[in-house]
Length: 128
Figure 1 (cartoon, rainbow, N blue to C red):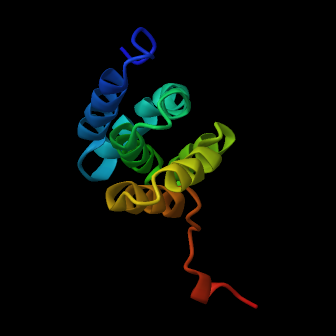
Figure 2 (cartoon, rainbow, N blue to C red; figure 1 turned 60 degrees about the vertical axis):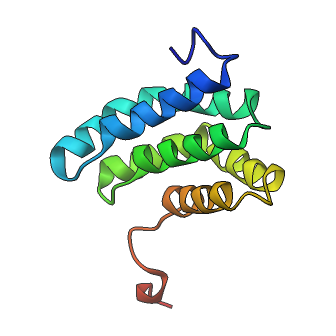
């Protein structure tokens, strides 16, 4: 649906919502669903580019990116790398810039940045 209706912000938004619902949960099943959803990264990124002025779409895209890239195991790290390689980070920052007055976009984008750039160890734990 995301490819076939790339010009429809509503379809893109609803597809991001669907991905979030599919991935929802905890444990191995959620991880497996997130792993399968990695194939949607290019469509999410394209939707963010095409609909950069649509705050609702940007917010849902950021939330979908969080769902896909969550996880502290090797697969989670690989999903975070895949999102970064797909140019998710500059698009998230752009969403924050374009929608600076929208608290929901700011919160979701901040969470997406935090999730995608997460380290496996807290900074305070790192050796100096």
